[in-house]
Length: 131
Image 1 (cartoon, one colour):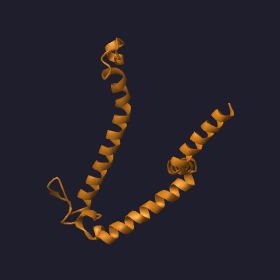
Image 2 (cartoon, one colour; image 1 turned 180 degrees about the horizontal axis):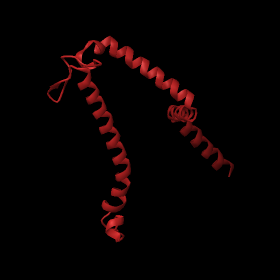
Image 3 (cartoon, helix red, strand yellow; image 1 turned 180 degrees about the vertical axis):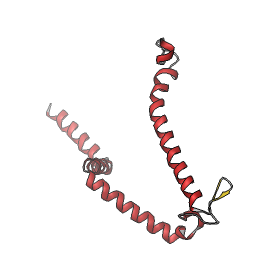
Image 4 (spheres, helix red, strand yellow; image 1 turned 135 degrees about the horizontal axis):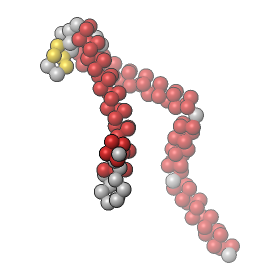
């Protein structure tokens, strides 16, 4: 019995030694997401690093990364050269993104539960079809 316990202990210690980097990584990830302050610090550091790298690559001096109207800002063939056009485009982008997110989050569970499962006998009907 003692030999069996020693053998199991040796196997476990070998397993732990072999997977030690993976265990450290998972522990760090768990700690990072348990404490939101450390997650925010990590996000801020990442954003600073990304901004420095993009600045070194010259991305902030390109026409792609401009803010506001200019003659080089083109959206779907339209030149966005006035603040009115720029505000309309920004408002449209915001409303379009919000609508897509809301409808995706609202309709995807219904689609997965009712339409994607063809083998179910329970039909999900709307209020108007049911009555």
